[in-house]
Length: 340
Image 1 (tube, one colour):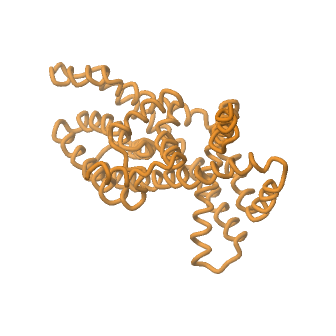
Image 2: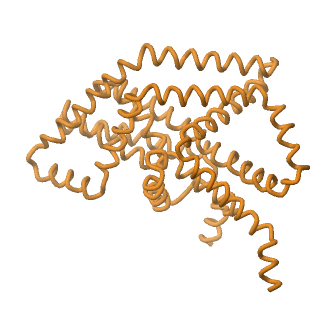
Image 3: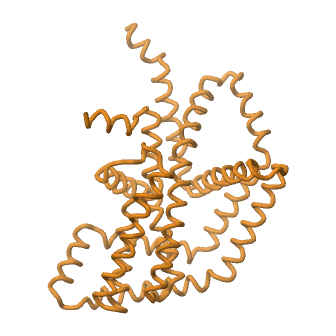
């Protein structure tokens, strides 16, 4: 009986209960998960950018915050007004081109076997979900625009009042709910230190890969560069699997505009871009905890996509890294010990 009482009164048991309580709240608020994730990502990235500028520019923090948000809102507004219709048309043309090619596959054994394997492995399902995701988001501009606007507004209030928010939140440490607050603070610190940094690294890698891939597509004479660049950028947020998913439609388009040699060229180009990511960008931006075996990576992506949809492909790895940090699993040390 004493052992059971010690277990219930232990800090580990309380931490598990609080974590389950937080998970339950997030499940109840699942309809607002887009707003929550957008707000966290915007706040985290803007906080990092503001701190970076403050270290180099001796200007008041509030002025930097206001200028940055003004520039971002202006850039987003111009992009929506000037480029959204063009990109939407290019994505529509891209989908039609892929659909036409898929419905009229050449009667070659290799191609038939290739597309049969795609169906078997559900790769075509993933590609279809990705295209559907893009079309849905571009067609439902008002809903996404409101979510992004609210997330930017909330992150702006957070950045403007960050010192005051911190001081106010610290008061909970001396309140009657201090034990609960301390555990929530523990999880929040771990989450920001792992999830936020991994998302930041994924975003930087996706932007660099998207720029390099778009340049390669321009050199190779691909059509609909706007739509293709958006597709590559979105799929680039998916670790490892994003390269494979983006390569499938690119190879189809390459074959339709230039035959087998065009496919070879695009495979070489994507391989070079992936090598830059794997050997230059990832080691510099990702921590040792994200250096997961490929089996673990695909296993996590498959299950996270099943439970969280498209968002799961983007946040699955960061959430897993968060759990590694909470359970104090040091991936680098484990690898070193296992190789001795």
